Length: 284
Image 1 (cartoon, helix red, strand yellow):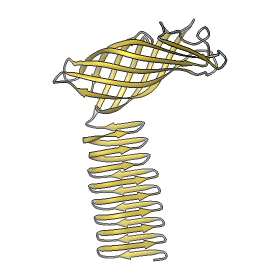
Image 2 (tube, rainbow, N blue to C red):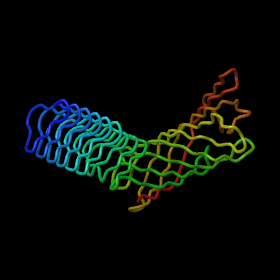
Image 3 (cartoon, rainbow, N blue to C red):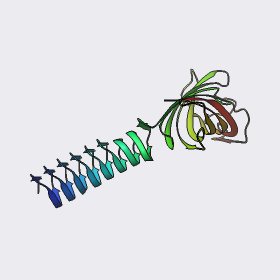
């Protein structure tokens, strides 16, 4: 149809419309529309729309939309959208969009914000991934470079997001730090686990213009469960400090260096050293 195809029953085959395909029953096949595909019942299809795909039941196949896929039932397949994939049921497969939402997932979500009820298998990959029955922890730790750390972790144990704030002493002033990272954790038994966290931490020096003062960290930790909601942990860390100042004028002075290099005609500096961290985590 140049503008629209409207079907009061079920469809099996090939549909193309300049504006929209609307089906009151189920729709199976290859379905494309310049603006929207709307199916009141379930769908087994390769479906593409310039703006949105809306399915009232379950879906099986590949669904691509310029803005949004909205599917009320369970999905087996791939959902890809420029803005959002909203799945009211369970998902077996993958979601690709800025905002992804589903119930119980076997597969993956890739987006800026991912929301799920639980993960049977797989991981959410994004800036913020909230899984209701997933991993949520608040950690308090100390280390040789950032004396006091507060970390908030959320996602699933195999892949989680880290939001950090901290406090340390710098060259002549106290420093507030904030950062972001990702991490992964594996079980070594009933009470023991091991985690690896990668993070970038900005060192905020008071009363100065913003400058590049970045402490990048890889923290490896052995964890022991004290109970259902508490862990203690400790382990080594690798630190890479990058500043657009030489170390005499930088916000922070490393305790020692395994590697140190000056760049930008001696005004910038990169330092690497090994350190350690220990703390306690509250899981909820």
